[in-house]
Image 1 (tube, rainbow, N blue to C red):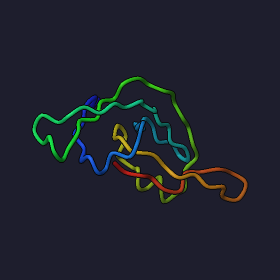
Image 2: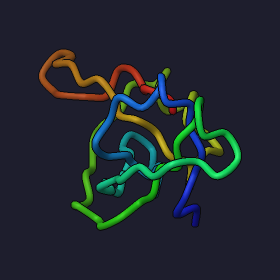
Image 3: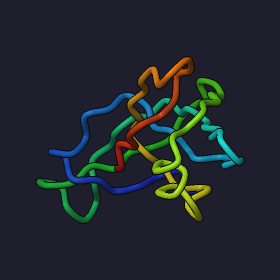
Image 4: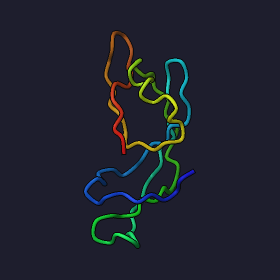
Length: 99
């Protein structure tokens, strides 16, 4: 698993990241990680290294059909987060915020 990634400084607007752990028929399981930033060795002025520190927890959510299709084959990837809405009588993920 990736523990350290390089990201443009202008795109670092998060304190934690989510790892897509498992995708089922109608649910997605995420592992939430606390992050820390350090200076990039190669691109000091424009990029920072984002380091995954501690696991904050595991979260399981129902997801819309469109989101499940968007996430297909992406287990193990990191995302910034997601948007949740009440759809009919349940709460589900309706949008993924990609890194």
